[in-house]
Image 1: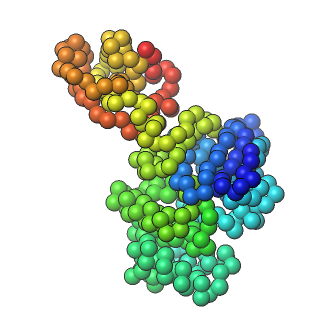
Image 2: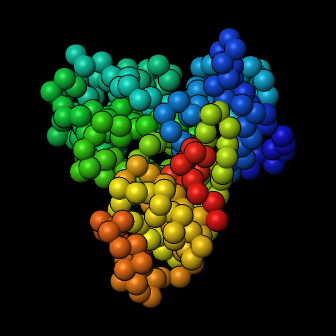
Image 3: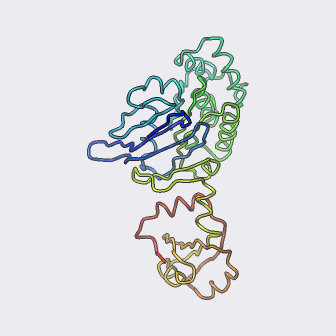
Length: 313
């Protein structure tokens, strides 16, 4: 692991964490350039939160090495903490304090002067659409407003790297979109590195790069658009009560199948010329048949699909 020119916000080699006999993260390597929007994706229990806890110096690694914001994770934890912001799955806000008071408290914890806190608080409240709620107690704010304020709290000291652990979990679609508009504006203004974990895969489509984590290991990585393109031009989906039979019959023509309890899908290099012929071939085995463009959710499903539910070509 090298970062001699300081071009990497996060550089990790063989980073691992084990709790007793249970491995949570297994020897992962990361090289995230400054200013990159990076997504760490995977199912629940894959090790995403543990990875963020290690990189933010909250949990000591069991093995491996890392540099965060140019500092050694094992030897320079205080220097790292001064240069990162962390937004956890649970809110780090005092519900009895106002929005402005929460930001003031966070600013003081980060050693900012009162005048600087007031100036930055005003900028962040305006950026996150909370200006008119400056004096409202957090307990009176909506879930989306609380999450926006929590992110503002995490960046009031202007960190080089912002870690976002499932930042929109539990929010409805409108609030999730609002949060991502705020984060996009924040990145545009500050140029900070953003390290995201999420199970809403559409939120990771705008990442510069993503890595898929499964059982503590990185199993795939790349640019979202390239990973999606690698699947093929389209997906053919068949709704059926006989997924195994449909997969067996169409596999010679369409290739490997992804088998689910009531659906089979095939990734194809070309758009289908005639779905009607496929439907006739399947007869009563198909309740519905359609095609669509693949997306990052499809990459996720194929990476994490159990082997006993795949049908290889």
